[in-house]
Length: 440
Image 1 (cartoon, rainbow, N blue to C red):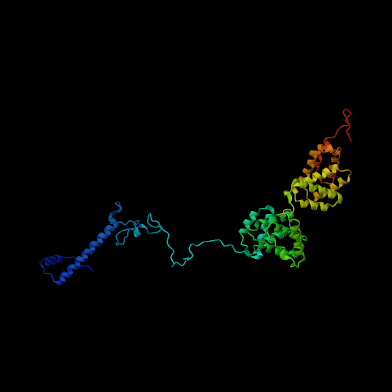
Image 2 (image 1 turned 90 degrees about the vertical axis):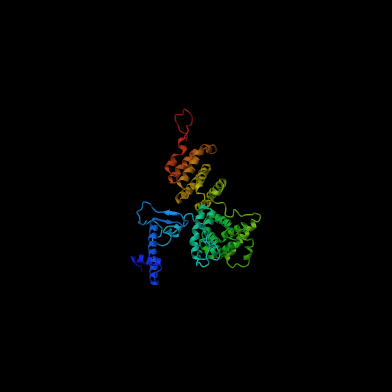
């Protein structure tokens, strides 16, 4: 509460000078002085907050000289409550969107033991956890990988795909499933499977896991022979190749001696033992499945096709010849068979070989085993080499013309291919000046 200033103040001052103040007057005078000092302090602090203030270092920091007196700058961070020294909050490091004072460098903080996320082991490592593949889903996930491998034959891609799967304790079942699928396929698939097992051995599968895989296949033989009657013999070849490639231990066969009750398993183990005995001096049984398809030398393929045709001329069994041609697995080289057929007809005596070969080509054409392109390429090769063949077979042109006409009648070749036969444009005269008589 404040006391108003009046004329009595001058009387009190004179009384003070004269020393005639009473105690009550003296107390009243002191109260008025304190109230007056407070009013002055309020005025000075308000004036400083709107105009200028002293910084912490004692230097004078001025406000905006163009702003009207008493007007508050809303962008100013200084306190406007009349309290404090008029400095910015938190030294200019506070406020929304502020990451600290300018030039401030944050150091690594020591972990706080009272932090609920505190880890005593030290640095936290985050890793992707792949759930283990269930036994029921194993075949669905592995079967497409094996089937694609039969197409591209890249073992490294299979290894990369298997690393992305957490097979866990069922890892050995991949080998057994791959062997089972190859038993239903071609010889080239079994060769690829043997190479795959060799590349996986020691890197992703140990010898003990490989042994478990083959043990499982031996137990499944009664079911496998329902779809593949030759499964025991082929499994025996797999075992022999695996032992030769050091995929299985040398003592694998000894573990089963006198302990196998299944007849089919005994056949497979006996087959493996016979192969290992025959090839004792060889380090690897590389040719246990033969050399598949285009990996074979051209001379070997030509020899196989010649042998196939000679056996057919003796037996006349079209289905057996078709089976042998399919086993060669060289559909891109079937034009060689067509070429050999035509050459054999030109070199043969009589019409028997000609009719048998037409029957064979007709069968291959109807079943789609030999395509139009391969048929055309085979005949065209004979057309190109006919002048050379004619040196050994004098009547090659006439025989060729007759054979081409028969093939066209049986719908083995097209009309365009028949018209391309060179024999029609190479008819010779008996002698010069004979009046245009054509030699028969």
